[in-house]
Image 1 (cartoon, rainbow over the protein chains, first blue to last red):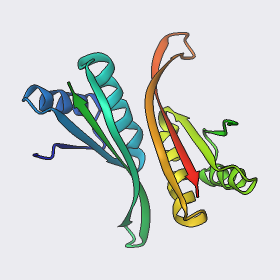
Image 2: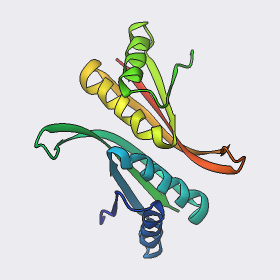
Image 3: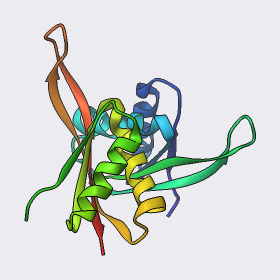
Image 4: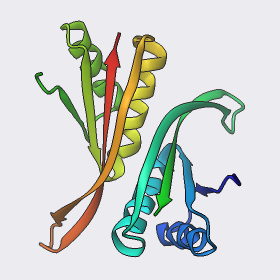
Amino acid sequence: MAVNIIYVGSKPVMNYVLAVVTRFNEGNSNVTIRARGKAINKAVDTVEIVKNRFIPDSKVINIDIGTEHMNNNNDEEINVSTIEILIEKN
Amino acid sequence: MAVNIIYVGSKPVMNYVLAVVTRFNEGNSNVTIRARGKAINKAVDTVEIVKNRFIPDSKVINIDIGTEHMNNNNDEEINVSTIEILIEKN
């Protein structure tokens, strides 16, 4: 099963909504939306907009949260929260 | 089962971490962390800090996301994403 991951970052939310809808229109039955840190709420926005406005028969199958260890600009190790939302289309 | 909900808002994340840890120390076996909009990533941070640094034998039981309809300051109706994370202590 090809893993379909959309990484949510600093672009406007509709960029990511379009990316998810496109993946479904290409025939994929599920898409994973992934984000870290401050982009986490944009990942949730993306899924909610896709479900409520674009693909009403899609639903959230699973949500995982976690922590990643990264180095910041001063090369100090920091912890960043992550979220991974699996959404499926019937 | 008494519902234990911590609403995450604009305070520093450690306020909410302390609130969750206190609920567990009072003998509750599970706590729900709830947030909307931009506070969603702080809710995820809260859970991750509780799990990684304060209560290692706690785990996430369930995560729900959704949309709430609210009125903004100009009394226009807006949609806001929500998250609800249920965390349990063994």
